Length: 260
Image 1 (tube, rainbow, N blue to C red):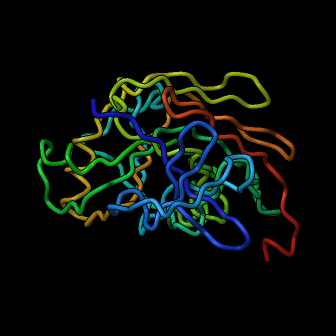
Image 2 (image 1 turned 45 degrees about the vertical axis):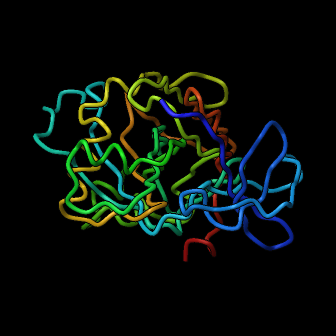
């Protein structure tokens, strides 16, 4: 694999920046890391800024039922099951996930997320490998009642704060062999390895690109393993991916005004 680099996106004094992380120092960049940036010379300590989702995707494509352990009694799909989240659903590390007041059953789904580094349209699996910029962590928050009863999964998957992502975007990792674990209040709820994906990453990119043009910075949530459970107000959910770190978010019940 290539040399590993670590990138973040952060907010400071009401403005948003990208940076390369070296130790506890952030080296500010003049563009997103997947858009050939240069360092500006400005530096910050990691703990002095608010980390955001580490990419700014134009689209978020998600894959369902991509681990056998998540299928239960259902047969494996013949092709990847795609759905989307809006970028407006993104939140970063240590930012709250807001449960709408009328939601009944909101679940966590810890996942590996791939960030594109190149334009991809009708690419082969071999070409797809060159389109991968790096890896981060995602939590595909899902409202199961809405997912079952609504015409589409729009509300169930893409409500505000339903796409936690971060904390870091890391290059050079073996995305086909990373340990993935989800914890709720410190208790392990999901544990697997990305080598158990039914449809691997190059295949996913190639398949998606047949129908949807992918751009630098776009995100692919690759699927969640095992079973999921309902979250409640005050829960703290951590998703850990080897080589990337831990994505941590607290669950907060929203007010009626936030859901109206």
